Image (cartoon, rainbow, N blue to C red; front, side, top):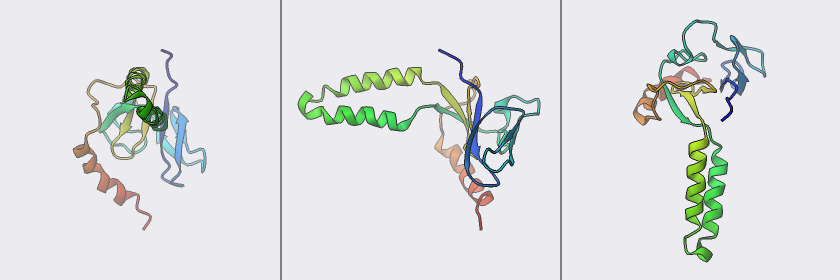
Length: 145
């Protein structure tokens, strides 16, 4: 499998637009030219989020959800004619896509996404309880009022 280019995706603190840019020592928003992250420190990527400084991450598959929904929708359309057997190839396709799709590291606080970096084994799948801790804090910091 080819190695992905390292990139960071998140929300600009100035213009509030979503960005996805290649990793560099200092990230500049492509829309308003504000500094959106700083990777000049010597710490590894997953010790602290370069966008918000949070130290808690989760891993998820870097997969387009629309593609997954289309696979299931096509299989569901054929269910009446195949007596449900169309769901078996859909499950196989889903499993193959799951195995081939790389993981992405995501910050719980700002939802910044880190693609292309090796994700340490200490970073686990999404945890709803951990996410609740950061939800209110993030909303209060980014509330336009």
